[in-house]
Length: 393
Image (cartoon, rainbow, N blue to C red; front, top):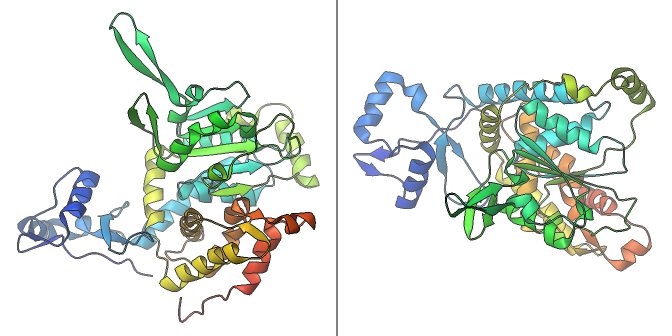
């Protein structure tokens, strides 16, 4: 699909946008909107450099124009650049995490969609290794936090310390001010400490002593938990689980992958030789390209039908939230970019339904009694919800 471009922001010296939209554009670019004379001059000097991509967001009825991250070469070349970046990151991570292509792919999808990842599995299968390898390969800052019952909220967000020389309080940032925060065994911390991540994950900011601090971008929380050992743990509340875009399970490696791991990782830590293949600026541009991927109304309606069906299923007592709909759409756009497309297909939605929605569903007591899982419910819904035809999509 060819990229769509907006018309000039001003005609005859009058703005085509509202004052609030102009303020958003001005804050995003750092400069006031161009005048008609400036647009004509720039059109003669270098029209390709002034084009803007049209991004349609599900939560807005109007169209907002933002600069195309890779200039005016078009959506296809921008997506090709993103695929090149992600290919390097994926190759670097897979040198550390053996035989887990699907898990690495989902982690990259969550990173591109600016979400958070919950890794749930037994000890020793590489949950923390995946998070650290992803952070090191992308060249971003990473902080690891071991969650324990005595961990305090200020140990995560930071604390204001009194400086006797200046006679004033100075804020000391906590681990959440890194690009990637690895929360090891998050369910071992108290609910009070777990709640300290709610604002960070939902709004990408931290409020300490009445002062709000903006977190770095990209910002991603990768939390791990062990479902087999629940003694002395505090299960994550639904509000916390709903903020994780996706949940994955590492699983045991295959015989061939584990044999290769013994040969390559047996003598030294594989993270020692892992070098960054990207940087935060490159990731921010990739995220902006992903947000511009087109999702047709028919595909959005199919996504909404699937999410709504979880709220009326007889085996589910608590279905997926509207936040789940947004997460599923953003993740579907990321999958489209990974596959080299500038539009979302129903197949993208289907491939992500289980990792994005399953951990949000609360089953009824009757369904739990017969050992039915959330994954079973979603597989049933994927077979029942009609898929839009090619003409509608």
